[in-house]
Image (cartoon, rainbow, N blue to C red; front, side):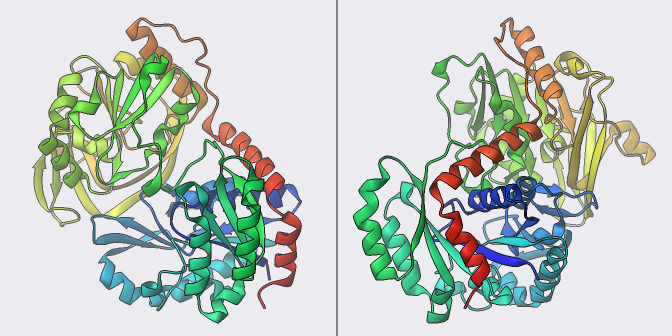
Length: 498
């Protein structure tokens, strides 16, 4: 049996995902076979494995930190919200169906055998498994049939590290309040407390930590400073959506449309490594401004998000910009740029919706989801994207629809190729996520945008996103070693839960 330890938090966004990634990296460096696990993840940023199975990107990031390939057994249940009260439920990488929150709450106990099988499969290839919880274990209204926090810990007899976020304030109340709401059996599982995202002189916390340990009866095993780490964060809590001040002199502006159900915006993280390039997420015509390129990203509800753009004026603003600057849609954004979206089986809104009419394609949403990794070489592109010609790309597809050109629709054929462009040389579309992650691809596009604008970038040699992340994992591990008591953490692993 693998040794196991679990990271839980006082709330969402306290840094559980990054802490798990850091632990995985440190344990890998220490010579262990280590793997991440999260029984249930709610996220719109997802990934497709080599086997064509879908899982949350947070566990992909943690697997990369552990130096192993992502396996769907690391995240057996993925919930992808479709609206405010329901989600698409994905089990073992495949779509189970759409459920309301109430229906899923009543159903989820039936998924415990799937969770246990996934965990046992992961044990076959790991010495240590680091489990991530979700939200908070103190959500007492969700305690019944819990499968992701203390319920998960009990399933595999895992000791728990509880993390609080001091950057939001009230960290002592967070930690003590959480412990107070746990049952005695649950509290006995908690073996260490961590204060995360601290800014300043940590000695100022000494008196508070002494009182916290006295009242909580559990040692504080780390005070981690606020870290500026360029890794993927929880999509629902990301700070990337905050509008950034471009007065610092960005020469190239990338605007990404932020719809209500935006998904896989990780496609644009690769561009953040260039100081002279800004990436802005915009949700209104007023914030769109005059960027150098507009991206329409993926969406979990393509028809609903297109209607949202139509109603708030962003559709009209993007169509106007497409006359002079490049506009590129990825996945759901690609579907929106076409002439029509049909939903005969009611996967989203049902019926037929006119698209933006910027690409000569039509889309029909279908029940079966396309999931695959893909690679190839760019060719046949015009305008700014012609700079990519001959370069290799690699990525993955996750979509519910099939998109055809108008002529192919008549012949019953499906679009091929990596990127489609229309009669307007400024408009492009693709189903491939991660298509810009290769450094030479991102560099070629940004340099082409700079040339079109007539500006010169001082340094536009981009690193492959994967190698950039590798350095970030090492930085994360180095920081955590300085501020976490790893001797105590290894001791917790040895002793296991009592």
